[in-house]
Length: 270
Image (cartoon, rainbow, N blue to C red; front, side, top):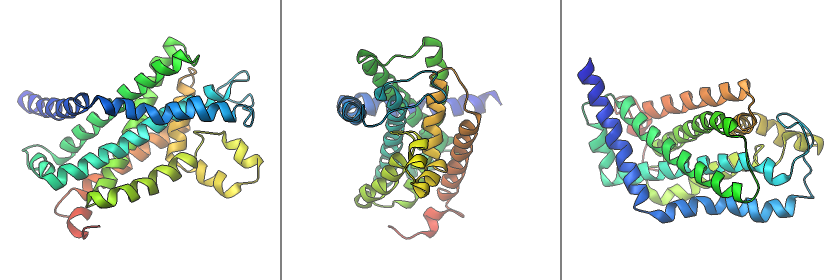
């Protein structure tokens, strides 16, 4: 039993170590991952400051600046884009034959895919931490204890979005088709959510269809879980939805990578 556990931990270390080495050999990846959220923070937040007022609503107990409101949504943006980047890496590894070697290792397929998911989650957390450091320089700060609680919510959100990327990698069979699929997933998830504006704004403006779509968007709940955690509060419904979505995405991805019954075996190259 101990030898099996050691063997699995070695696999986890090997997969995570490979992803970390790849990441730190490309310092531009960290900078590029911060460009999008910082652009929203420094440019769009300044423009929307007076256009989008944020009422006193949980988890806030006073009026806040728009840049403070949007910060949790930008943390979610980082996890979303990194999840899609991980999916792209999976498609690339499959084309290069790396995934075939990995999945033929004498370990459960679920553990191997879980190792890939864990590596992507750690990378997301590193990028989120870097963003929080930069945001602090612009006056966006959270209590230290609340940040510790926020790490758990951010990790759960990163797991869910990484599992979604894992599922997408089952269906995207060629690198050439990845950009269109990624845009089809990223932009609706991000814009039809509470990342950039409160849901009550949508309801108040009469956009009922968009409001209902945002309510059922798992990314909305990932952002809300992070937002509440950064203020020392729990959002149990959002946490449950994010955890449930992560489990569903991972199980579907696991079936897709099963050559006996999965979608990867039956589907033709997209």
